[in-house]
Length: 372
Image (cartoon, rainbow, N blue to C red):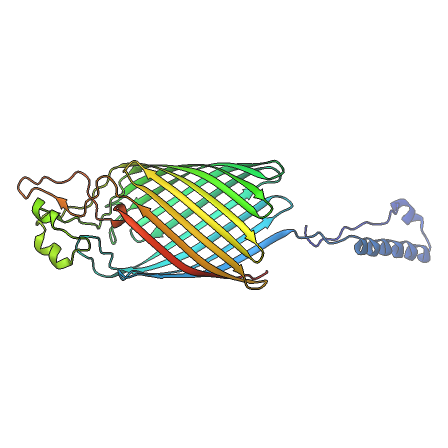
């Protein structure tokens, strides 16, 4: 127990106290007992609290040329005891999203605002070279509910210069429509994930890591709000990237079916990281290669260079670059046979992030460190 003092009492035989007839002798014994207690209290040191505590308060903001704006305040905490190898951390955030969410070629929706609540809790126990981890998370918004958990194990080798890790997880998403109870309309998506990784110390200033992730998804991921415009072959050939709402409305067929995606998906990703500490700065390089059974292949590169600007403040530039091809069934404009034949493509989507894509993101990161 932290801050407790051990107590040691003088040895006094009860029968001896009984035969002590003189008050002076009894007073002498009592004084000896009190003296021993005082000596014990002065000699016993307080137990040192080796736990490191951390609390964070962050706010992120995002906006783009499609009139999408996001405000995300979040709080987090962490407690780590180096002596016992135990640690626990958690976080809670709120996403306030406001958007009209236009697709590449579709009818833009009205502007809407939605709030999402998300939380996570993770624990680790690693007294020596072998460690166990467990985590759980949830996310809730008016038309979407997600919860999941996972566990992992890791082992250090060569005096902690090498670490191997393995993990697995499971999550279930329930997709609904705003204002409609899940009992009336909902779609389920189950996701299982498996991870294996290695991290090693290259030299006293450099760390490297490599990980492989495999994700198995079963369920309907189609967006219940996304309607896909259909075109004749001639009009589809004339659809340009970023076609206006007026052009789409005047050239599309009356039919506008809901989005429909394949009911299974298998994903695999290979990620690497290299971090090097210079005198007064730290460079972090991340690369991720991605492939799935829908035919999408992508590459994401992330670069951060953090400079020390004092004992409790650092800042630096951040760059991110992403490139990918399209999924096998993606089309800028889908072709359908007009009614009454009603011949639709089996799979169809208006998600531009499933099409060919290149993005470049730049920014400046700042951090202020506080001690608790």
